[in-house]
Image (tube, rainbow, N blue to C red):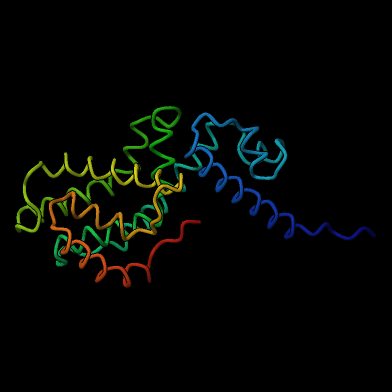
Length: 215
């Protein structure tokens, strides 16, 4: 009598392939949004049929990436500092948390102009953008940050700066695992450089202990 086929190893292999495809797609599409599915399959080390077995087309793959990004960003948001924390510490805290999932930001913003659409990306990033805006608004109200720009406008500018710094890390022009960018965020928000560096140094250890993994 024929023994039943062992399904669990096959399922584990399928889960491993899916995770590898998503990780590869996140990295490659963040670099080049025009990367084809065939190129992604080769980069992931799977045949085209395996990729299409998990994702019937580009739209399905991108939506899976969007859902993954949304889940990871929500996880990072859950670790954000509370409203009782001084605004400069809260902004440093948030920036360090977001750095650990920065590849999601880069990938989403790259795809916004191509496939996912600006509205879908805005929906995913809305909680993070609202958090930064709220921190800046509170900081300006408390005198921690100067009111040189409206909070929402400054938030958009800071986001663009973080994405640009991520790209510089990718090219090797900048070495940073978060603290330099967090200090740059505070300085751009109006905090004097010595104070910015001191805040990041003080906040860093606690944030690193609970950062969301990049993979």
